[in-house]
Length: 154
Image 1 (cartoon, one colour):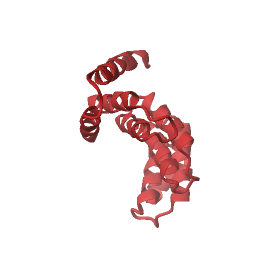
Image 2 (cartoon, one colour):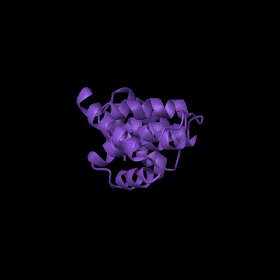
Image 3 (tube, one colour):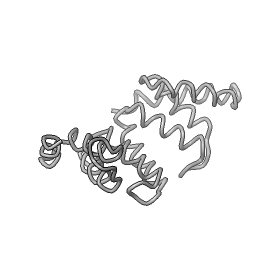
Image 4 (cartoon, rainbow, N blue to C red):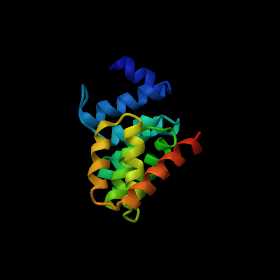
């Protein structure tokens, strides 16, 4: 753990994210969400997509940070802009449930679809369950949006 801490203190984003995970999950260190947030934020500010998702998750749960759907959305979107599959799924959930945004099943389906396309298996299940609540036209629109989204990003 001391090597990880040294690397994190030296500014290595991956080490900072890993240290945040250790604090968040209480792996080898006492569980401490404030410390997790501190390290996730350092890595997230350097553009580490995994840390951005982790930080957004803390905000969405109010763990180590004030509960804030807008902040969760901000960090999930930053990670999604880097094509992070888990960020896509988190955005899908936010739109499906109307957390921090107006509920929008088409938008939720689009994010779940992107997440599934990038390898997040549970996102396909969420997308398929959501599709059963939608019209054929809505599903078609969501699929078209997903196809348009990917090429227009980095």
